[in-house]
Length: 147
Image (tube, rainbow, N blue to C red; front, side, top):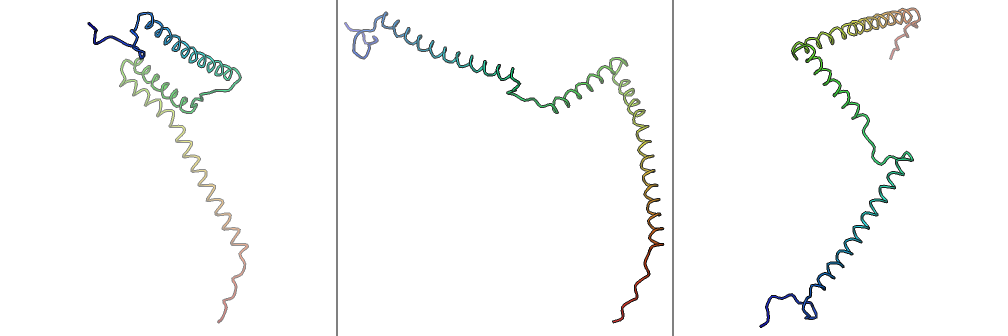
């Protein structure tokens, strides 16, 4: 009696355990060679990257402006948290921060008003001087032409 579901090779010879093992070993060797090639390529890429880094060539450039903005924001957040904790509540910490900002901006606002006033006075003086010069140096009006 012949079994219907037996594995057969293309040459119709029965598949033996040694033949299956030989096929597995061949597949293992092939996959081992492929994985060695992948590993070798990765190693060479790493060496190239390291050489480039050592010689001052950077592969990936950062964003210095974005980093600065992020650091300033993080510092402001840390300061707000510290102020809230040190004052006992975030409401009192906010009041302290508002008072500090107001006292720091008051001299700047006054200086800006003084500068604007000085600039306005200087413009008025310069305008008056120009009017005085134009009045003394103004040529006589030309006679009207008769047509």
